[in-house]
Every structure is written in C-alpha cells, then in structure tokens.
Image 1 (spheres, rainbow, N blue to C red):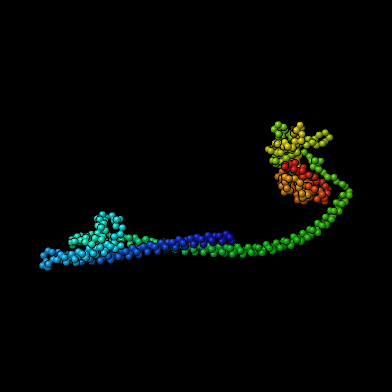
Image 2 (image 1 turned 135 degrees about the vertical axis):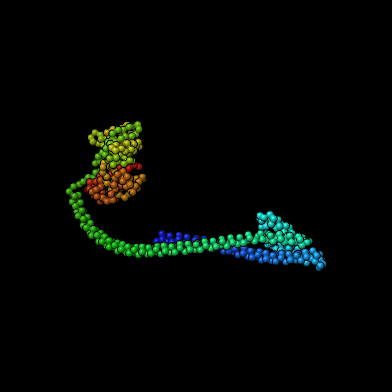
Length: 435
C-alpha cells in the first residue's frame, strides 16, 4: 500500500511539472504573439507613412513641373518670396516635425549596412532642429528622393520579419498542439495505470482480509487445542512427579550416591608430544579431526606416585593441524617454574571432548566472578564446542555450581547427584574459558 501511494505521488509530481512546462510554453507563445502584433502595427504604420510620403512626393513633383514651366518661359510672373514662403519654408517645417518624432530617427539606423542609405540617415539626423536648412526646390527634391530610397530600403526587411514571425508563430502553435496531445496521451496512460493499481490494491486488501480472518480462526483453534493439551500434560506431569518423588525417596533409602567432581572423574583429552620451555610453546596430539577449536584452553597436568594428579599450568590453542595443535603455555598459570611442561604431560578440558559435544547445566542464579555474566559464560562454552542445556536431565555431563547454588536449589543439587552428573565450581570453569 505504501509503495502504491509512493508511485502515485511520483506520477502526480510528474504531471504537475509537465503542466508547468506547458504553461511556460503558452506564456512564450503569448509573448511571441504580442511581439508579432507589435511588428504588424509598426509595419502598417510604416506602410501608411510610406503612402503619405508617396503622395507628398507626387504632389511636390507636380508642383515642381509647374514651377519649371513658369521658370522656363511661362508668361506668369515668378515671385521668389511667394515660392520660398509657400513651399520651402513649409517643407522645412514639415521636415522638422517629422524627424522630431520619437520613433523617426532611432539608434538602429547605425546598423544599416548600405553606406549610401546610412549616410542619408546620418545627414537627416544632423538636420534636426535646423529650421532653415533648405533654400531652394532642387535641394528639397534631391533629399526627398533620398528619403524615399531610405524608406523603401526598410520596407522589404519589415515584410521579411513579418513573414518570419508568422512562420515562427505557426511552428510554436504546432509544437503546443503536439505537446498538448502528448500530455493528454500520457495523462490517459497514467489514469489507466492508476486504475489498475487501485484494482490490484483492492484485490490484495480483499485477499488479506480473508487470509487474516482464516489465520485468526486457525490461531483460536490452535490455542484452544494447546490449552487442552497443556491442561492434560499438567495433570500427567503432576502424576509423574508424584511417582518420581516416591521412587527417589525409595532410591535414597536404598542407596546413597556420592557427588562426583571433575578432578576425580575426568580423563585426559590428550597429551603433550613436544614442549619448548624457552619459547613457551607446546604441541598436543589433538587437531581438526577431533573437533578442536582455536582459543580452547587445556589444563596441563601429570600423574605422580600413588595415582595423584599434579597441575602444572594452562595452555591455549594457537594453531591447529589435522591431528595436532600448537599451544601457548600461559605463563601466569605456571604452578612451579622448576617443573615445566614436558613431553608426556596430559591435557584436559571439560568443555572439549573428542568427536563429541559435552553438555552443561548451571545450578544457581548468582555469579561470583567479575569477568562474565551467565549469558557470556554460556556463549563461551558453546564457542569451545560445548552445549548448555536449559533443564536438568540425564543428558547433562557437567553441572556448573554457581555462587551458593547448592543452597539456593537443594532439590536440583540432589537430583543432579542422583543422575550421576559431574560437578564443577564456577572458579574451575573460568580456568578453561579464560579470564
């Protein structure tokens, strides 16, 4: 469900981002249309101005022709003051009015590549604010023709710009339509996928509810059966415990078993095959084929006259071969420096047993050492190949007696004695797992 919601959120974000891009494109098109409209307006104004200028030029040419006829022999008198006042002065005024407009002489004239046209615009700019520039009709006619040439030079370019603007507008319109269709297709696809996801989710939810109901019913049935079994087992267990107590009482009367200690019952796990007192190493006849693990500590001892055991030191396994291992003699455990570890000495460890797994059980709840807690001791035993049992049974090989364990659980202490388990004190175990 969370995965489906996350996927839906991602698609929604993608849809919003696409919509923003479309709006940006629409804004660009709107801006382009505005520019195109402005260009069209400018073109129309220029065309209108061109028409007006053409009319003015035509009128002036006609007047000029008439004036020539007057100047060349017409009987009508020629009055210079009238011509200067009616035509030349008016031309100067109109010219100043025209070039005085804000748009008339724009800075863009400097970008004109035609030097002849460019020179006229430069001259025209220099004429600004000069009211008495022209004093005869010939100069007026020449400059008027130059003005027409300059205007005609601009008109084709404006038309080309208009055509380019229309083409670009059409391309943008087509791109917007394509983008709109693409977005519609993607939106429809997303809606279809969303509907499929919702259908799958609803089907999964329905199946989950059905499976949940089935499991709850099955759980209730199993709990009911288990409660009945526990009840029956409790009754049977109470009956068996009563019988066991009767048998133990009878056994206690018939025989008295003594407690067995590790040192009284243990047998050597191997012996030292070579020892080097200077290097502080020794080799034992136990290896990988016997299930030996690196770090295991053995007690090194020897048998003296009368069958008594004499501890010499402890050694720790460093390197393991197939049928032998190199051990480091722990110097702080040497009992008598004058009686070092030598070839023929015996080694033993209650946690290690050749090709077998000794089983341990803890008697008591309080530990007296400052190195390990109960959980860490259990892990240490298992690291060296042993196994810690949770309950006392005939499978237990060694009972680890913790601080005042025999007084805390006297019944278990007695039961372990009856089962024939070997007892080991907490301090003795620490000699083999390390401190």
